[in-house]
Image 1 (cartoon, helix red, strand yellow):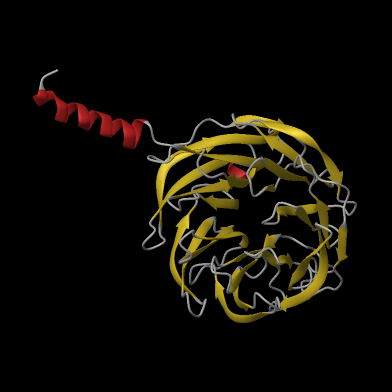
Image 2 (tube, one colour; image 1 turned 90 degrees about the horizontal axis):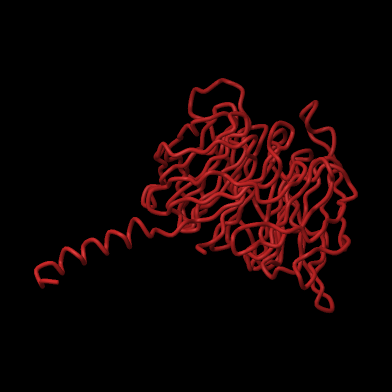
Length: 372
């Protein structure tokens, strides 16, 4: 090979490194199985282009809507809304799933599930009966019979949606000492304590954050610095900003901001909320307006400023997720059977549609791993 050819070879190899050999980012997708879906699906996103692979069935399951990873990413937990249970799956190197068994939630209608930061406790929020349930995690990642049960009581002002408690989401604080359970039915976020005894974790009832009546808190997320809690409210299409004391678990409201564009008067409810990995932006989805609103976060005060609103390209964005590097977002449009990919501007927080999509019946939840 002539020396004059070396720069060309180096250029070609660099091109392969940055494009052809781009690392795929893997995700599992939870679905509703009341049409043609069969369970949990596996998908990859090209980290250079944002292109999606064809979804592949990873595990057959009945209505495995919301999913949660163990911290080591070796186990995936899924609720079954129709089966009123939580099932654990071992995650294979090829992103296949093997069932490790399930446990009943006893109360009907689980809505969300998450594992604590230590991987010793799995918690489910029960929408139908209004309760929080905890399960101990075994050495192989499976879960034992429920070890904690906290019943929520009360109601609020909405004539049909708030006649009783409806726990809707599960989010652990960064240190794992508290778990936030937004309860749509009683307009409160329950902040239960996570306690340890003889190496086992359990839940104890803690404090509550009251949300404006009729709001219907659905999901919540802690800022990455741990100082603030952000709650998306389904019925009022708003986000509540609260301060959070990491020692006492006390939260106090600071701000309420709409997720809908000024002047919009159509029917819409919110769904998902997320914080960018750089902790500078908060995202919230609207079902009806079918969009994702982007807000800039003030690190000192925690308060939000609207940045932009982007249509998700489909109907009813029940869920969305940011990639671990913060460069991409996948929106799961439940009622148009589509996944849409957006590029994320890490400087402004804004979303840009890539045109990359995938077809999947009734997608409900997107859960990314880190790079393989």
